[in-house]
Structures are given as structure tokens and as C-alpha cells.
Length: 81
Length: 247
Image 1 (cartoon, rainbow over the protein chains, first blue to last red):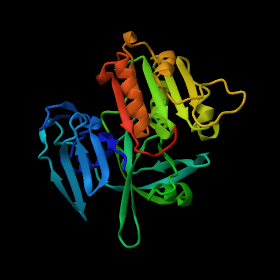
Image 2: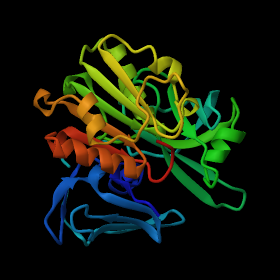
Image 3: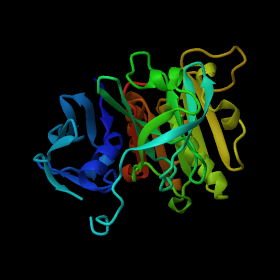
């Protein structure tokens, strides 16, 4: 499966955070790479939506939607916003 | 995040299809009446959601093809193994309902105040948000110089060809056809590479602003070349479609 980028999850992030996030800054918790969310590597159809660092490939965010509930894991991020 | 808490929360809503227009054999533009539309920026997208009879839901993002102030339109390329696009390109008719949410995106957007010169690089259906940018430039009487490099498999696969062939003043259009071309074709006939970009891209010293949209492999190759040739990474905006579409 080919990766897309953070633009593709703008709607999902709006739903989760209630704000436009594609231009928000993110910092990788593993390597410290900073970039805008739109630039992150996104896999839409892993089990859930998986967001990885473009520099070190670490998993930064995972979103899993079950019916109307979205489970969010942001443990790979050092900072977002 | 300050100041964002008061924003209207984005929710799904039902739009009505106003028109459907065939652009190519596999691409259609769908114009929508959206009752609760906050207005969009050039380069933004919206999400479409289809729900089948047993409750299975499929969502996809589509770039907005129209300029701010115009009716909301999306241009959809049919992917044979797609869950959403075959319905949009084959089944949907004027008057049908369509569930969507948007506008979405604050990164891959252009406003006249962002300046330029602009370098727009489209791979296949990656032309869609760039067309919105071109229309927005025209409608705001912006004089920012633009070069559009549009890579497509064949002449017949070019989307918006009639419109793109009549560029506004200050807009240069360069095509490359990567699979086949007519015998009298005067444009480029190969994939976008460093030599081709060396001929058509603004020099880095002009402080250009680049927008690249298309399949992931196209966007990664082109953005890498631009950054290597001296474009600051923050002046190279990228949007990757995945493996879809042809360049």
C-alpha cells in the first residue's frame, strides 16, 4: 500500500481536535524532526490510520474508528499544535 | 491552538449534485449545492462518505476544483478497484444527494498575498487543486507570474485541457506526455526529471513558491529535485494522492 500524506487526514483531525491541523507543527518523539502535519507519512488502510515520521519512520499517531467512536494514540509525538 | 476552540465543528452534511460533466473518458467534474458551506480556499479538499445498504462506510478525500466564490466542485478520476470513485463517475446523477464534510486543509492552500512566482506541478489528476489556484489567481486579478508543468500519460488524459490551453496573462503552461503523444506534439515527452525541471522551473534565486500534487511517487521525485536545486523546503508544498492517477 502506497503512503499518502497528512493532507489526507485533515478531515479526521478536524473531527478529533475540532481545528484545522494540517498546518499545525508536529515534533517526532523519537528523532525530534519537526514538520507540518501535512508533510507526515500517512497510511490510510493499515489497521486504522497510521501516521509516521518522514525522517525516522517512527509511528507518531494511530487512529482507529469503530462505528461512531475514534480511538486516538498520539504517544509517538513529542509535540503537536 | 488558541482561538480555535470557538470554531464551528466540522460535521457531515448532505449536498445535492447540480451538474456532472465528463472531462475525459475516466474523469468527471461534479458540481454541488452545499447548504452549509463556510467558503473555501484554493487548494483545499473535502471528504465524501458513501454508506451502503448494510451500513458499510467508505470515505475518500477529493480536491476542490473550483475557486473560492464559485460553486463547490470536485473532479474525480475513476479507479477501477476504487470503493468510491466508480460510484461518483458512473452512477451519480444531477439531483442526487451526496454526503460530505469540508472544506478541509490549511497547508496546501494559496492566497494572492502568499506571492510567488508560482511553480505549479501536476501529475495526472493532481491538476485539480492547482486549477482552483489558477482560477483564484484570475478571479482576484493577481499578477503573480505562474508556470504550470502538467504531466499526463496521454493527450486524451489531460483534464481541463480547453481551459488550461487558454492561460491568463502571466501564466505559462508546459505539458509533458509520458506514455504516448501525437506525431506533431511539441511539448515534452518524458517523466519529470532534474533536466526537465532545470528548463522549466523558476530559478531558486527568484524565491518561487511551489505546489506539487499528484501520485506519491511523482510528488516525492519532484519535490526532492526542487529542494536539491535550492528551493527552501518550506516553499515547496506537497500533496500526495497515493498510487492513483496517471502521470
